[in-house]
Image 1: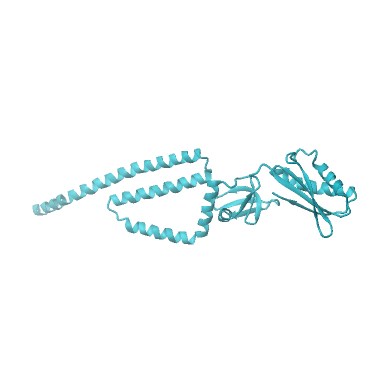
Image 2 (image 1 turned 45 degrees about the vertical axis):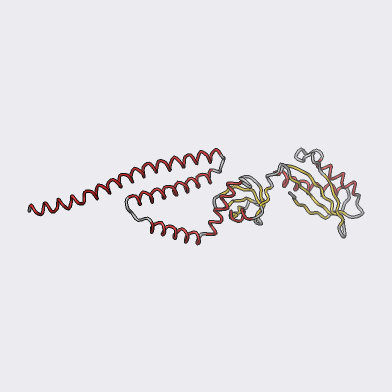
Length: 270
């Protein structure tokens, strides 16, 4: 019996240095984990304050902080695992392979995500702007991470992928302080051009929504069977569509009353 006790004691004595060594590593790893976690949280909070001061969009700010926080915490956990003797090489390789597979499968979505990041960073347009891009036109109602939502003139909702917006020409009608609106009509060659100019300019003369500098103008373009007369006027971006509708009707009425025989087209130009 005494021999067995001595044998067990000798085995425990041999294991004691190993246990103490691992215990020391484990305690050190816990300390590193605790301190590292605090540092990661402090770094993400500092980044959040910097992004807020830079007026980065809240949606993008929250997403970037989450990604950075998760990435730093993953690195911390891998470092702590290696400190206690866990082999992390194969684990990192598996994560890398999984990330590559997911990236290949979601490359279209990732392109839209990257486009959303670029839009939120460089702000070629913002919510409330009227834009034309990718064959779609409308007012921006929201900018999401993967798509931008537009509302067109018919109150239809249009979802445009951010990848399309970031890689194509975007016309932002709201960036300028004024836009050109125009109404075109067709009159006969025998009609009085000077009278037509005076009648059309008289429509905008007392309209406070029409800018006086530059002022309204009337131009004439010969056609094979008639003359195209165009009333052009400058106004605020939000007033172009209603004023074009207003003057399309008013121009027809005033010229018909003056005896002109008409054909009519109306358009809006930026």
